[in-house]
Image 1 (spheres, one colour):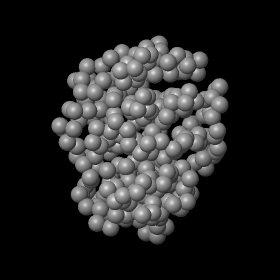
Image 2: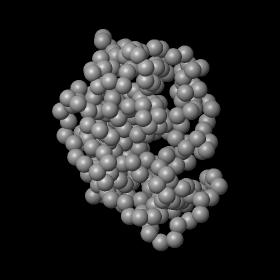
Image 3: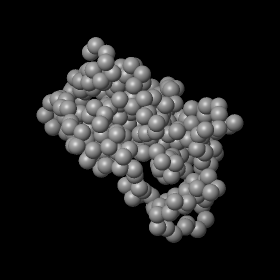
Image 4: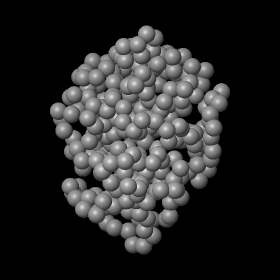
Length: 276
């Protein structure tokens, strides 16, 4: 069976995109075919369990149809690198939520076979932290969306996009997103890894890491859901909030990045039952 893999889906229509891994064999993955259309754009529709039409931030419209298994971008043509990341995330969220999976605006990395999600706003520094971890040979699962299912999280496209290069990182990069980002390539990883905890990012003095109570983590997770208009199962959120969670505070200084990475790795190793 053909197709590429990202966010727990078998993706068709992007077979030549190098930032996506080949889909694993088997027929247990939800499928979606990515299409583009430059003609008349559809009108955004109310939430429906069979069809979602959404106006994107750049003026394009995305129509996801559950019956046909298609996701169509209406508007100016998108290049393959843009379709892989970040545009694939939008239909992936809809399809996964339709299948009962939960999705968060988060990146994820792996320590000792367990995944940890890094959450924060679009300017919270998730990508730069993940790139710094990747430079330390820490496997990165995804840069943009954490799709959670059956106690684990799925891998995303094999790249991290940076608004500006991170000083001192010896990582291969290339220009992407019409010259607005530096794209760091990532190696293949396992498609699904058990989820072990959450790290919420904030700017401030430090770096410092503080453990969060489950009630605090629950509120933060609810706020970081992708497309919160789509319904979620409260029981799932409660289960996820019971996992270890921390708030990571650090200054907006590149010089603090090394110490920040050490803190993150120490927390992940402690949660995984490994010596720091």
